[in-house]
Length: 57
Image (cartoon, rainbow, N blue to C red; front, side, top):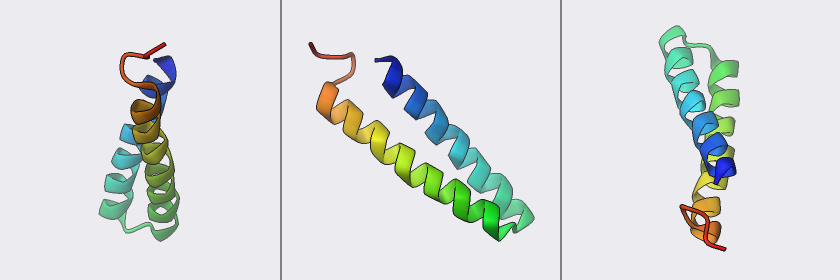
């Protein structure tokens, strides 16, 4: 359950990073924040699907 929360927080922070870098038009930051958002967002979704929320034992 803690893993889902951490992945979710990282995904939210990456989304905020995308927003900030779009405002400043920083292409490298957009690329890294976008990749982080996609990867950790996917991990979050798949962890919820596979393990359930709250964790199913």
